[in-house]
Amino acid sequence: MARLVLLRHGESQWNLENRFTGWVDVPLSPRGIQEAKDAGKKLRSFTFDRAFTSVLARANETLRLALETIGQTGIPIEKDKALNERMYGELQGLNKDETAKKYGEAQVKIWRRSYDVRPPGGESLKDTAERVLPYYERTIKPYLLKGDTILVAAHGNSLRALIMELEQLSREQVLELNIPTGAPLLYEMDKTGKVLDHRYL
Image (cartoon, rainbow, N blue to C red; front, side, top):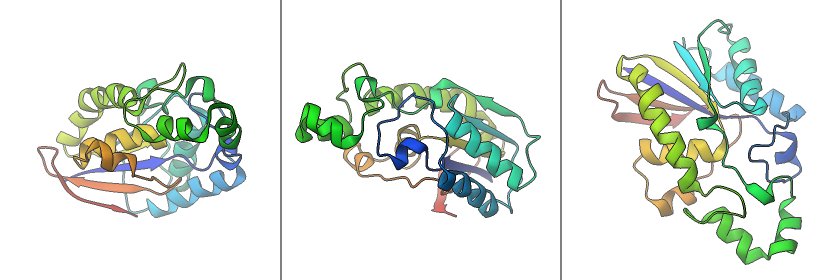
């Protein structure tokens, strides 16, 4: 049986400051560092065959800390921008309150909570899914079909896009999906890649 563990990065400095982060490379907060180590402790019973992550430091650092905690830093790791967070364009770096003042609360809500509306210069969740899902099918899924145990450390929206596919969620359902930082989510799959069970560890 294949096992896929999805891990949203630990809290970043900008999560703490309530800013739109997107592709800006910000470090983990002290709490985020601890969340990554705690995630590792929850993964002690797993032996991973390989790991995948984005090219952003907060996901890379979360992966490193989790693997260090379980003594598995020697596994193959593939980094790809396909797993990056949704790119928020002109909103990146802005505090969410500042953004509401600048653009209006209703407009910000549309950008944050609609499937296919882009913020200025940024991506919609649909755009994010259109890079995450082909990457998953082409690069990650073949290992799962072999029965491997895989760890993916990524971001709220890139993981949301992946979960939409794995759980066959509607657009409306995926918009309600909240993924906590530093909480490993396990999917167990049969040899065809069909999900048999999923749960937070």
